[in-house]
Length: 132
Image (tube, rainbow, N blue to C red):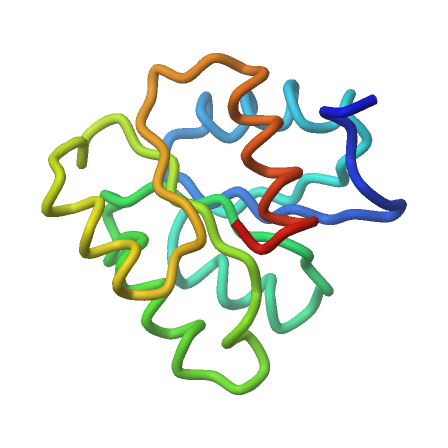
């Protein structure tokens, strides 16, 4: 129960240009009670956000169409999405400078893969319930 979605419905947007990564997150998060939307990049994520109410964004850093840093800049510049919880989950931008940059841009957390499934579920729930 400590790893399940804190409320129903609870919608997450996972943004990653790797379809297998989106499906992995979906297979992990949906059984925990989350509704998971997938986007393959910044432009499709912004289009989905205009149409759907989302409780948290879980984004890769490096993607073909601008990446997670561009996405969070767009979100934090918008009054509509300025406070939307946001977590980076990356396997490529592992250095401390990238982590610090992501957090300075307004991410609530910056996680590096590989990551234990329970730790990811805990980080998502914590972000939704405490803002971190």
